[in-house]
Amino acid sequence: LQADVPLPEGHRPISEHFRRVSDQLLRDTLEAWRIPCHVVTGSVQERVRRCRELVDTRSA
Image 1: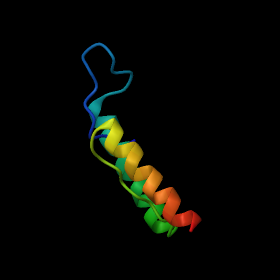
Image 2 (image 1 turned 60 degrees about the vertical axis):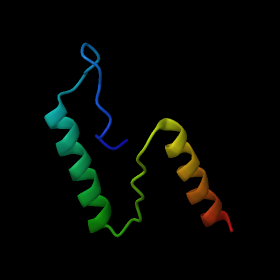
Image 3 (image 1 turned 90 degrees about the vertical axis):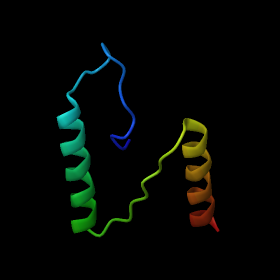
Image 4 (image 1 turned 90 degrees about the horizontal axis):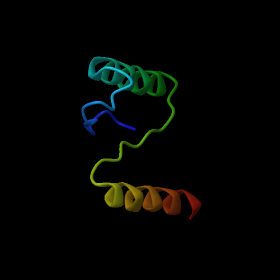
């Protein structure tokens, strides 16, 4: 999950800095290995809808 969703106070098992760094490391690694990646943003409903669209496209 992209680190664009803020975590509420008291529910942060890791720091925001770590979230950003690990997200970028993951993206860089996927790019280096030429593994396709889609960044899905928006509300939970929008993200689910977009993921379904991406899966349907790959299934066609």
